[in-house]
Length: 268
Ligand SMILES: C[S@@+](CC[C@H](N)C(=O)[O-])C[C@H]1O[C@@H](n2cnc3c(N)ncnc32)[C@H](O)[C@@H]1O
Image 1 (cartoon, protein in one colour):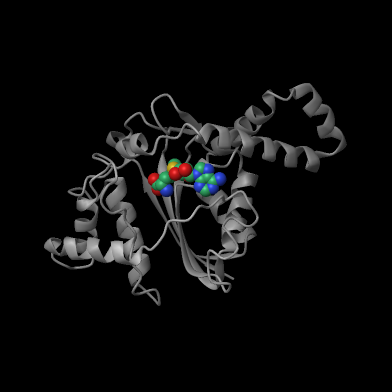
Image 2 (spheres, rainbow, N blue to C red):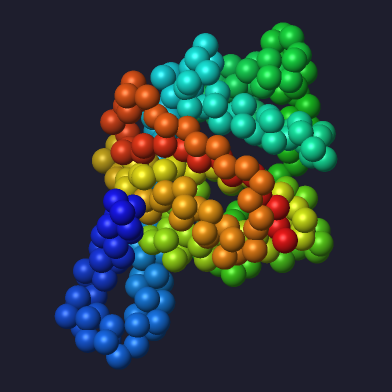
């Protein structure tokens, strides 16, 4: 219920600038068209907000302890990495490797790579080899816009689509409402081949986060049932849903997130 109210608030915010009076009269005549316009206006407003997104600050808010404490299994990042590790090492998806940024970024990714080595049963000292391998296999970073029906350039991926798609804290943080979140899920689904796997990580019951000092970015608050319904609507079969509930000490004032979901799903 709280999530529904939150989504409605976000939608309302999208039309405030355009005149709510005009909006309500159109609503009576043609609800679908108004919904479409509100979605578009919300997406445009999000794009403006994201011009102020500060990746270095965001990393400092979310990717250092306590949220990335590799001594604790109940810290968000180790939980997330363990979910990804399991997904990539079970069933038929062996061989894939998680991607981490190499040298030159604003954060030292060494503990991350060491932790993944530990999950893989390798000695933590194998991290240098793994980091070098990652730099070798990640050949490019390409732009994507999840609100476009064709989210990437047409020749960015093989025509049959990718085997696996990993999306992390993106769709709900860039969508003004649930309907736009579901559509964005449909757009990225086009990047996958039929039978391909989606690993989707996202925030639960979050209404905002800080994308930099003073940059408060609205988020569509989701619950587990809404995530499952969106997946079903966009032609995915759910394989697993895992939920992480934040401890009080993970609430560090950079957002109001209550939990994290991890989904493994198959494109029908
Ligand atoms: C909450 S951050 C998540 C960052 C990172 N994936 C993580 O897991 O921490 C949201 C990200 O969405 C990106 N973004 C904003 N608008 C987008 C769009 N229309 N399509 C795809 N990504 C977008 C932002 O640049 C930002 O990196």
